[in-house]
Image 1 (cartoon, protein in one colour):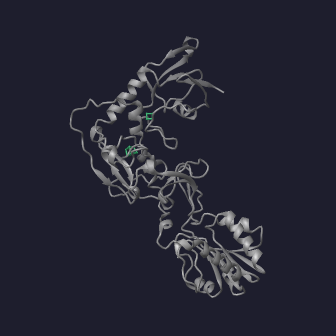
Image 2: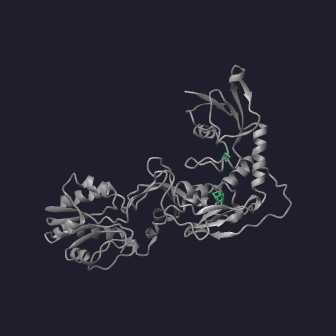
Image 3: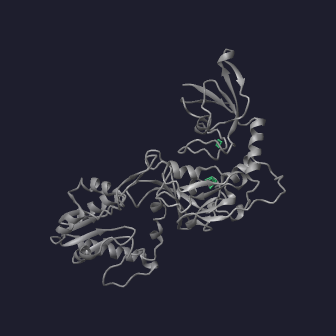
Length: 437
Ligand code: SF4
Ligand code: FES
């Protein structure tokens, strides 16, 4: 495999890889703003520049210095190349770029949501100058409401154009543009448009500074108080990898977790903001038994024992219809089905309703937004299918009349059973496992 040396570290590379890509793959830090793995390379921020020496075929492969610093994000690796982003010349460039970017920046980190996860802040510490030499008045740029989920604080923008390229190259919607030139250029929405696409809030994650902000998270929590727990989209069949960011028992936001094979770097807005029901006042947090008084929190043990005993009595020895929700994890669905088989004399399995909306939509980079708005219909069918036939919802409803009792699971984020279906289920003794009242 061909090799090059980056800041003294010998690294393998594949033809076509840029110096920056190879450096990052080898945990060799090179500052970068405008480059992003999923977007085209524009090399406009200039902070990644490095000094390069490479064998010159015209002088029998002698290692020779290139005359200028070059953008490592845009320069392909070649055999025997030697790169320095830690040389005095490269460090001088990093300091100059940082000073330039901060000329008109308000440096309002104490009130900026991005503080703590801001590349400008981090690089100012790592690569910047300790003091500003700029004495003139800063240019003030407006705050703009650019879409349902996103605010733009223009004076924090470093014009990396990641957000613009995202709407051109990923969503293909092209709402964002660079307006103006020189010191007055700004990001804006195309006249007459808002930032309005199914992936719109991903520009907040892409923005390396605090210029694009999530309205839903605005001023809610300092990010260093958040605990990050890896998870998976629990609302749709997309299977998007995500991180749940929470503190003191409350969820504060969902962020995408990169997975090149599933969701690349993105999550849809419906998944990003679809978790609010977990804190709903209608959330069921204590079991209840029809005809009995409700239990206070301190009697949770008694409540659970009574509810579980009553549930077992309701199902034991009966012909049990089991509604297995497509919102369930595979393991839970399997265990519930097993329990029903152990208690009942006979069981009829049915998959709960599988909501769909429109058709699957594939974005320009291959990200797929699934029409199916339940995460695990396939998993439930496959796992419980090993125990018996799993009927689809309409078939199951036809079989309900022949059942003596029902074990029903819901766990949808909103009302899922209404009208005739609800009347049919309610006509039988029922054990219900659900999320919302
Ligand atoms: S708003 Fe953010 S992502 Fe867009 S150009 Fe400015 S700094 Fe880059
Ligand atoms: S990351 Fe290379 S020029 Fe911006």
